[in-house]
Amino acid sequence: RVREAVVSTQSTGERVLDMCAAPGGKSAYLAALMKNTGMILSNDASKTRTKALTANLHRLGVHNAVVCNYDGLAFPKVMGNFDRVLLDAPCSGSGVVSKDPSVKQSKDEAEILKIAEMQKKLLLAAIDSTDHSSKTGGYIVYSTCSVLVQENEWVVDYALKRRHVKLEPLGVDIGRDGFTRINKYRFDKSMSLTKRYYPHTHNMDGFFVAKLKKLSSAVKTVKDDTQTSDGEENEEDEEEGEEEEDEEEEEEDEEMDEDAGEENGDEVEMEDESGGLTDTDDEVEPSPEVKEKNSADDGVLEEAMDVNESPQNVKKEKRTKNKKGKKSKKENQEKSEEISSVPPKKVKLKKKKAKNDT
Image 1 (cartoon, helix red, strand yellow):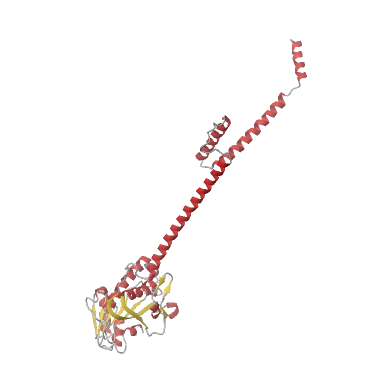
Image 2 (cartoon, helix red, strand yellow; image 1 turned 90 degrees about the vertical axis):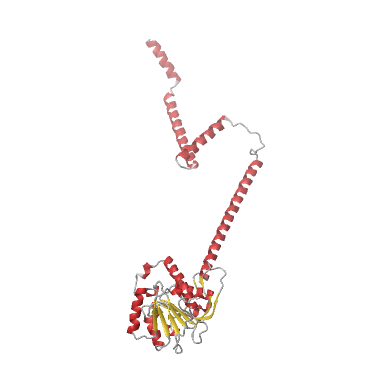
């Protein structure tokens, strides 16, 4: 049914371009629908694959096909003004994971974006190769065996913004409508006319197909070429929003620092009002006890810096040591007093006794 979207019962005698034709199944089916009339240009960029393409067309009895080996981007310079163009674009193959599980690991995000850029260029070349004034044609069918948005709706939306084309109904009953919005991406509302197919839902390989009608050969002017899709515009908006948030946070931090400085200034003023020393007051020389205390505190701070500990903890430890020292000193004094506490009478008696002995 997808290939029937390219041609119809009125397609006999038309010129059709199969831009990525190998290994030949698409071109052979198109020839059958066209009843071997008109002309099909079966092109493929790989020279080795054109051998299989030629063999299959001969085997299936196709007489209205011409095989060529050109890069798809070479059209319409090589040949143009086709009534219809089929672009089954090279893709990541994410829709055929059931057949080839290695697809899940063989492609990373950078490679998928690179493939998407190539698909955009191929789709524009396919549109430029189509004759919009064709009485029976002027249609382009874009398809991939991928389920990724970057290779499907994103590519079609890119073409809608740069060429005078519109999406047409496929005339296919099965399949789910394409996305008009998903995650950060926002697409044209007519994207619902495209179709998506999933292995778990439709019991077939993952697939995407869109049918476009060319309205004129004029090229749309885009204000900013860097904004290739609504998704990219949304990314730039998000980046700008993040930058604005960072600036707001910096401003809030500066305001908090200023408020903290004002509070500290208020505390200093309060100390000055409460009788503390100000800049205008005369300096008073501290007493020896205060000097000794200050020097002790400085030693404590240096000790804290040496052992990488906080000054509060060091001070606390020193206080406990001083308390223990004072306590042990007091105990020693009490013991010495007990030992030396002898009555005076006995002392006199001892002295007298000593004189008599002499």
